[in-house]
Length: 171
Image (tube, rainbow, N blue to C red; front, side):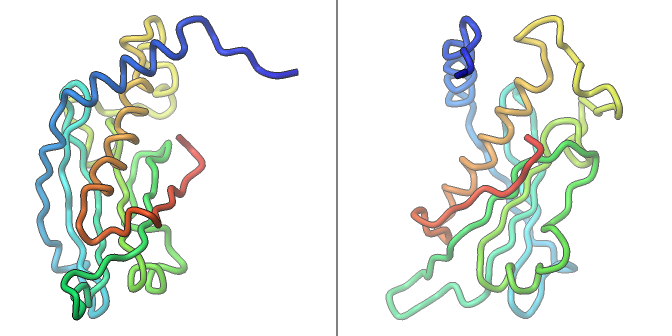
């Protein structure tokens, strides 16, 4: 049996999208020398989501971004926010292989470390914060944060916009 959308579902998400489109991304990108390697440059990124709310993320760009025709673009991996308190630059295990071949961006949604002012998520408890109203439910903002992270990644000149994948299973 197919699932039925709740009443007002499309209107709700259209409103979130409209609100987000009215908020400038306002990126601040700063090098992180300690996490930069021979094969990739690492940056700390601050962007703005609905609220307005400042978010933190990690951007890794492979070295060798120039070619005979100018800038070289790379496929990109967007690590969607996860339901946790700590943001990793990239999931461990294959990080060297990935960082030397792909632009990667991981975002800490509101409540996660480095994106925890003014809202610091409590675990457990975040899942029901603001649940009494669609406008105050924290996951309304978290979903917007996830979209805003993708907005930032797509804006980067190093990214091949035809080769972007989102990776994650929490949000």
